[in-house]
Length: 495
Figure 1: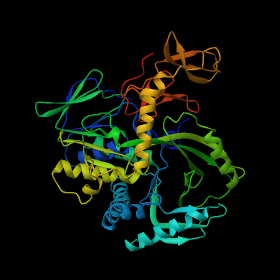
Figure 2: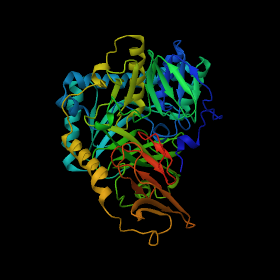
Figure 3: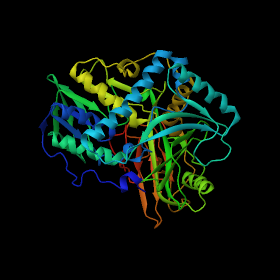
């Protein structure tokens, strides 16, 4: 179940693993779009730069995106202006608009063929109650001197659109082709890229950082945590300030001519639309849920396919994938210094599913920080901020879920037994007074894990759609054999 981006582009053929201790100026942990973008700027400007990726490059969040390059992050700018200030909203908008230009500049300078094209972007609604929100967003953006428009007709062939906001001159691309181009440049400038090199710890020692993989160490002055969700708990404590959300995506082909533009609706469930592969592929994403939700009440891929059929009756699903991303409680990414107690360690996280622009913003802020330069946008993404919680409802939900998973669920006695477990399903059962996570495959083979997250000990939930064990507290995920596949977990599950 690979994404179109992963299936259609290989980044590095050899799976080289770190097999010796090395010294470098900057150790970047994580080989997604943030880590690769940081390494690109740093290596090109003379820094000895090393990327450590635990699996293969750009095969998690970055390889499972919708790859929209846009500053239109839903209906967001009225929220920013009301919650922070008009100047804050203007800087956020400017930073993201500049990120689009920066990506285009890189593509031109490096001659990267990555299907980049400018597109208008739209947030639309089919609900009367959402129309005024869209009009208010247009008004806010116009007050920021941005040429947003209110429309009732859009190119997307969907019925009953009551209103939409149009952002001109946004963009989309093939994210893996773009990242392959960046990697080629990194290697050309003597950067080092190691795959299958999981990091287990980072420590400060004698004025430098030591990054530990399974058998080797990397010594560096600077460290960049670009793992989507930070794998180091303290002293940053980002697990208290974020949650993870999952989305479902399909790629379909149809004989009909497809539309121009990038689209997302404003209501729930969220639905996103774009085309790819020279308008031969329609990509539809949506039906978000928090990672670790106990019951996914329907096959989200089937729901997306139904939507594709209403638009194009002859459409055929060619790709299915899921993705997840971190969302901060105030909805703003954390970019900059990891903690005031750990100078020269940097972090970028909490992109709220808008990582294509946010990653470039992060790369430029971190690059400037390493150079000792001021960055115009640094303060609005300040990673060490600790102002009052803006999203009190979500903060309360996080506390309840953590309490439930850490304490309450652990004392519940499972009703399921191995005998009544269906094939191709998983459950938590009790064996010899111990809770055990069991998956029974289609051939009745049994796979057993201890259903306790290796991050902070929350009880896991079975995700039968993807055959994974998911953490409802902080979003770590493990395959049915217990291997860690999404951070913040580092260690595999016990069996």
